[in-house]
Length: 248
Image 1: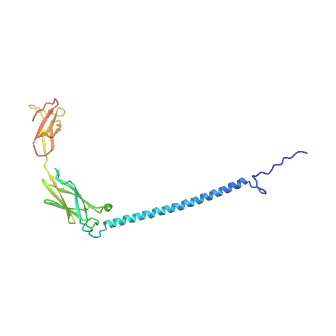
Image 2: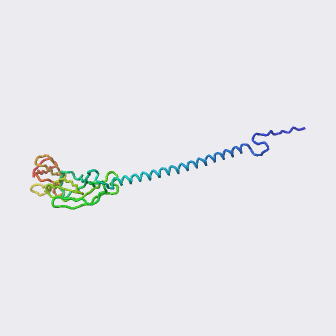
Image 3: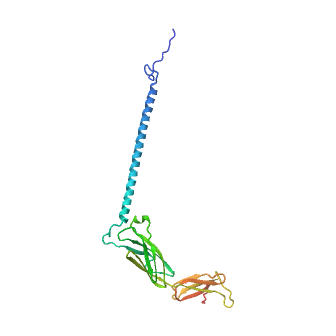
């Protein structure tokens, strides 16, 4: 009688069931991981909403605080224990000298009660006078509630006393305007009238004390010019390329 090989039951199948044990475990594992991922996603969403709510509330609180500080700084409210309005000039410096017919004056100012500065600044210089508006943007109160001004003031020859005033406060500086002169001429070969030009010759200028020395180059016709000279004595000398010095 031939022998028949009988396959022993394996652990991969459950008793009385045709479902493999490994498939069931895989299904359970997948379900467990999906549940974990779903829970993690829900937790992350809740955390994101909470953080967004926190930062939004913080931003609103900071904005409200800034507004309150601005209102407190620029809202007026009393004399501040004897405080008074002030104005200053920070440009130009006191004692400034120039040859220009006018100068740009700039400064800052503030009200006695710390309120938002408005209105106009009055300026004067001898027989000249006028007003200029107070400059103060919305952000001028972030550091201190102060405004500024800027005006072109005409100058007279000699010493000028420029005064600016605002809300009973004033400030003054002295500016000197001086005349300037021009020295010009022509360099030529004596007896021929032929003009000399660079690099054949250069023209130098020294003051009487010899403490300042400047050089210029003649044009194609031999003409030269020195500008912006204060009143005084000067020595003008042509200098040949051979370094020979001749006085004219």
